[in-house]
Amino acid sequence: MIEENFDKIYKAFRIDLYRHIFSILGKREGSLSATDYFSAETIFLIGTPTVSEFAKALSISQPNATYRIKALMEKGYVEKFGADKKSASRLRVTEKFMRFYHEDLAYGNFIFHRLSERLNAEELAEVDKIFEDFIRQIETEQGERKSC
Figure (cartoon, rainbow, N blue to C red):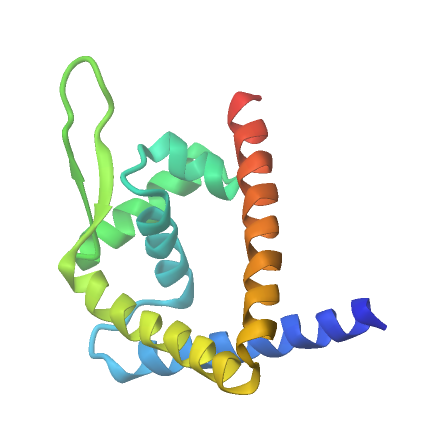
């Protein structure tokens, strides 16, 4: 039962999120494709990755990562910085991308607000504890992947 309910919530959340992202992408002139958006968001979420770190995070080939980054740079959503003879350049999203992303963050706040309206303080504290457990597990798994 819990697995089925979780699956329903997860699928509904993903569909609603994708609907929201596509509505953002469709509103803007010179819009990003969904692949562009998710690639730029990955760069933002990682921090300031190198091309290799970006490729590894998405489990894609270096040439594929380079292709995606080049397209994002040409559209003005990602830029390279910090290159010198000893180190690879790093990537960061531009303000142009952040204008899209801020609308996406508003959606996350909307979802949280819906959750907090439906639960009392005790239930929210329990959900928060569950989230903290998930976060610790995710951080552990990410640490294990980095050391491989």
